[in-house]
Length: 280
Image (cartoon, rainbow, N blue to C red; front, side):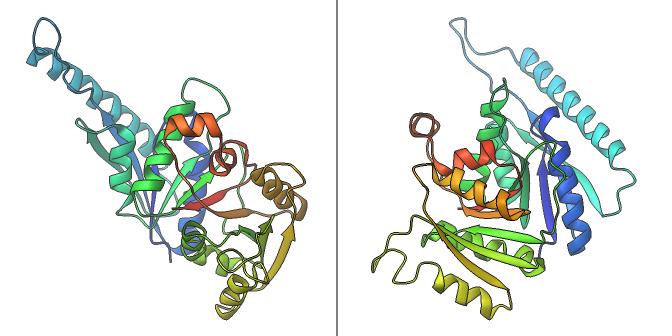
C-alpha cells in the first residue's frame, strides 16, 4: 500500500499535475503527502583571488532560504484545505544538487510523483535530472504525470510495458497497489524475443500467471512495433484502449548517452499523454 507520497517541487510549470495526482492517490489509499522544497545553495567557489568571502556566501544562503520559504508558504496556502494529510518539507542542498537531495528524501516515501519532461524550455534538463536521480538512486518507484492531464488515479485500466528484465519486474511489484484497484490490466509485449533467456515460448504468459494469482484480471497482448519506437507502440496501444496508467521499467543512462541515443524511458517521459509508473 502507498502510505507516504512525495512530491518534489521542481519549478512552477511542473507542480500542479503531480500535486493533484498525489492528492488523489492519498485519498484512495488513506496516505500522507509530503511536498518537498529544496534550498538550493551554490557551493562556495574559489577564484584567482582566493575563497569566496564568508559574508557573501552567507548572504547567498540566506537568499536561497528566503526563496524556499516563500515557495513553501505558497504551497501551504494552496493546499490548506486539502482532504488528505500533508506537510511541506524543506531540504538544504549545499554539497548536493537539488535532485540529489530529492532522491535522498524519496527513500522515506513509498512513491514519488513528478511532472513529465517538457519537450523544450529552459527547465527541460532540470526536470530530467530530478527524474533520473530519483529513479536511479532512491530505490523507490516514480510516477510521472503530464502537466495539463486530468489523471484517473487509481486507474481503471492499466497497461504493463513488459519485457523480462529486472527493472520491469520491479515496476510490476511496485505498481501492485494500483494494479489491484484496476478493473483491467493488459500485459503488453512489443517485438518479443523468443528464447531461453528472453520471453520464453509464450511471451507474457509467466508474468500474467503471476498477476492472476494476485487476483488481477489480465490479458496478454503481443504487438509488433511496425518500425516505430517501442515507446510509440506502447503509447499507441494505451491510447487505443483508453488506458489510465502505463507501468514500465526505467532504464537510466548518463545525460550525454541519453541525448545521443534517445531511449524508451526518455521518450515515455517526454511524450506520454497519461501517467507512467517507472521503477529501476
